[in-house]
Amino acid sequence: MAEKGTGTAKEFALSAARLAAGRHCSDIVVLDLKGKSPATDYFVIATGTSDRQMRTVADEIGDAARQLGLRRFGRAGYEQGRWILLDYIDVVVHIFDSEYRDYYDLELLWGDAERLDYSRPESS
Image 1 (cartoon, helix red, strand yellow):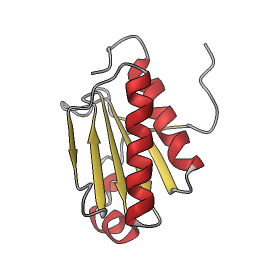
Image 2 (tube, helix red, strand yellow; image 1 turned 90 degrees about the vertical axis):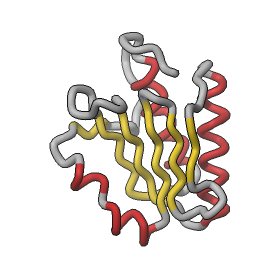
Image 3 (spheres, rainbow, N blue to C red; image 1 turned 120 degrees about the vertical axis):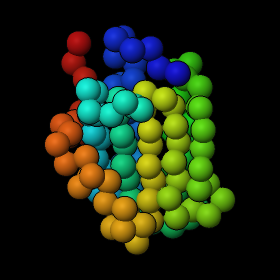
Image 4 (tube, rainbow, N blue to C red; image 1 turned 60 degrees about the horizontal axis):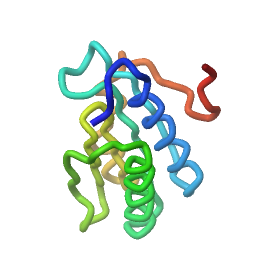
């Protein structure tokens, strides 16, 4: 679980988005849900190219989380590879195929959330 207030959750969310981008995911969005969601602080949403690629991205995000000392609370959809959800409590990562991404449209559901720029490292 990420420590609230230390920036670890935000750093991890941005890092997960950069990792997904580096592995050819598209339409990557990081939503800041602090004060909007009682369940999590950040959503990372990405679209994968295939079930295999999506599982690889999920595995690499898991490796990155472990390097930061974060423990995954839950994982769903990994075997099917249509919508993989990785729950790190303060950060929830969604890796969709394009059909499921369009159908569930999480950005519309959380349309009032701030979108964070993951394309460059945070400056301290």
